[in-house]
Image 1: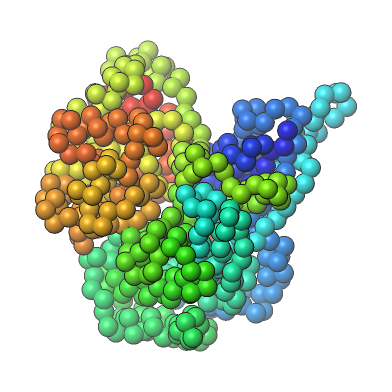
Image 2: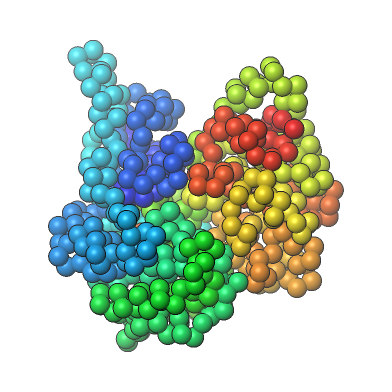
Length: 585
Ligand SMILES: [Fe+2]
């Protein structure tokens, strides 16, 4: 039996994935979860000890393991070529700290931008496996799992493999846009008959992802913490400022339908000019006009790339991945702005998703006839991570009479009632979501109807900036009644416009620009969550819940029932549901 261990080995969002002998995804999870360290910068993808449990659970003793990682050999050359580097270039930032884009931002200047990516590569995770095998040497037992091959795949190809093979499409064009791959920051791939081919790879240091990162830092946030989100959230509160837009447009040009980025000196000059205009309160509260202008520029840049993708691989199905695929605001608009008619963005378009991509590429090499997972396994479920044990709830119940095991129906009914009365519920079910968004298995839920629900949630639990919107989960069949141009959005990957007539009914999940980053929930994808929303709808007539990730500010989504109980008692949550257990205050 042969298994495939995929490792995402960028210095941020390291992750691992296990693919079984039939090509199915057995497990996928970011290292941040088990470490409880957001984005796990500079950590290896398999924190010590975790591999033992995973092997025990998924891989029979004596199996073969193929290890695949998400950066190609070219990457090492790239690291060595730092003298070729420039201002948008991640590698450059290590070699030339004075031209580091964040050094333009005073409050960040003291921080080192880059973790040692090469180090993360070297630690690429299978150390635990080797150690386990060592234990069986000389005992006469078979090796725990023998590593029979190691592969490295180009970074953008790994993005494309995960996104395309995880999509519902047999034929599609994939646009990969991120901070940086081995040779550039964007690439186009085609899926035909289930096989993936490179169409074009952007070369050079220009990067839409870094440009957005630069805007993030200049607006008062921190791209290394993944605060690009905040730009999207803040943008609707600002106006597209012609001066700022003009300055940002000096950072690139469109020539013959392709992007060309400015040289270092121009980037430095533009950054300095933008900073000179920055309001004093920006580092505290953000700079809405720059956020809005930056988001507009991002859309313009993406439009150029999407148009190129369509010209080179004309097809109605578009797949977007790479970190820029997290821009749900653009994702929601792309179909209206391009000739594509269907869109898939996976649950983990960032570098964590490459753990699955690399493992699938290794699987495809061993199985030349394989053309992706079985149709019933597509689009790929986001529920690929760890389960939590209910044992901590049992222990809690020994001292806390309000902790009870009510069964799934019982907790669903009780949670729906508490939500309909304005309570905040922590909701933990089944396997953790793969990717940054809570999709109803590690979520904090609230009633979307009270106008004050957002502020209450911020004050009691999330403690985050008031401008950031909360997202709605909606029963898929009700989608068209509530959203304009409704499109299925299983992973909260796109932002759509609420119908005018319904906005006053669910003010807590309507953003300042009238949009919502929705999750379409179906019985088939998530029966427990669909059941809860249906129970809430029965009481209230509204098939929608406010859904935000089960974490507190600065922490990743929780990983264990202990984490959940801790948050329950240290925040203003009114109830906590873990599988078929509930505890109320
Ligand atoms: Fe990437």
